[in-house]
Image (cartoon, rainbow, N blue to C red; front, side, top):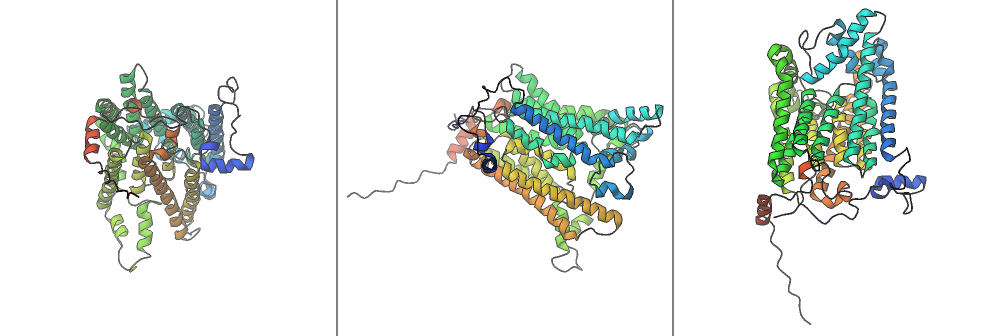
Length: 506
């Protein structure tokens, strides 16, 4: 039987120090005296001190979210005169949709008004919005929209901090990895643009439950709980359901399919149970989300948007290019997008089965979600948050991460310039500037995918496996041997050893 063990890394089992292990941090550390020395205090020696690495990272997350709230403060009154929501880059769907979804009139989501989001997000909006409306009825002097935004900001920020705490729990030997999430400019800029942190928090909790199933006496319960949490995440925003695919493929390679199927079944049952009451009682309102996604044309900043721009620059401008044709034939656009994402998922599955060592769950999860965004016809500004926890768990390297974040900042600024130009019917800058920003964002995400794939094919380069023997997120798969069928299959297809070269005798 094949074992999933390669020689245990020299550093496995010890606490990671980024100034030693990460080339970018090591170089930056030279500015403040160099990497951590051999005689620095160890975590054991630091016991009893309040400011541990985990608490510092949690404090940094709170600081980032507080600064985000300040950055959004010019929009909190809802007046939005002179396009302040664009000039100050403080627009948020949370405040806009309080009025657009009728919450300010006391309308119950789905029952009284169709909602453009999956059911759990609609429930969340109603759970916070209806009490604010009731408070406003009793006290007409309050600004309901501002109260609603601040209440959402408080809950979503708590979910963001809980996500950081979850990353810390998954990476006890690498606490500074969570600082990538806590200090991410994308978190600072987009944390409360929409309700994405609800799904992110639920997905993170689901991954933690799956990981803890490895050592718990309540393994079966945690496997079910992982599926329930991922299902709840999928009922809020669809993407957490994509994590089930990597779990299933890795379980196939490890020959532990039963646990994965239990989680998948729990997730599917959860999605159905959450959606069923609304789907039965208010089918038209429930279908609004699917209707909008089916009929929506190419959105700003996507691969398809860049293609439309190139259509007008390449070839005969009088002829309709392929991307413009797709935008005018949305059903075909949908199928092409789904097909490309499906092919990407097949490629990720093949990578999982063919890699020299079974990949880590976070690596495959990041690749799948990134592929969805790359080929999707919609890539809203806050969707960057989906990738944040996954890239931290998949590839906690500061250099490429910061390059991606710089590209996201550029896109964020260009996007608001595009919004302002549309609102004023006067371009802020040439369209090519926005397309360049979108291309750089797309390119850096592709670069991260390439780097993750390289580490899957060369696991000795994997930073996490230099600290952990196998996969700290793998749950029941952590440290498991590959299935006998996989061992036989690899042995059958192994490249034959080269013939020995005769050595001339002297």
